[in-house]
Length: 202
Ligand SMILES: [Zn+2]
Image (cartoon, rainbow, N blue to C red; front, side, top):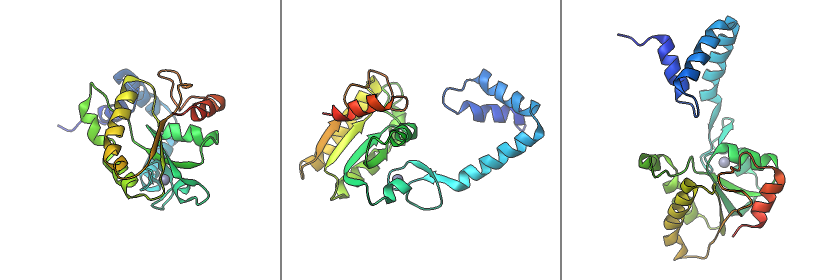
């Protein structure tokens, strides 16, 4: 038997972060209750999303455009010697909005979790190793992951990955200062907190 269209849409909404089955159900009913124009607009925007938005092939951030490389990676005025590793796009967006960092970014796509070891395959560790190993310009890696159990676990894993590269050449590795208190995410921090975290990186 075919799955009902309502159930199908509920299942899709439930895949989004922080959305449970009850909320997902409310979204679906609200959409149907809305003016039919909204549904049309919604489906139009969604179909454009897959065509007009993609991951940058260099830093893996999500950006709008048809090119392979995003505007930040293509920007020649930025400092190629510094690479900032972030968990997610929202962190990058907040840093860019506050004009805190002038180097290059790398979006890992999540954090390791002791409870969900299968997540490891989804994170871009292999690409990170390749990028750092093959780059002649990077001389500092800044880790901007949150100070949680998952964040710490991920940092240790990154250090393990980078180790063989460190044996071959000098590379400074720093982590953003604890101005970002435990669990506080880059996504929500204000300019002063971010600045403080960069100045106190070690
Ligand atoms: Zn990029």
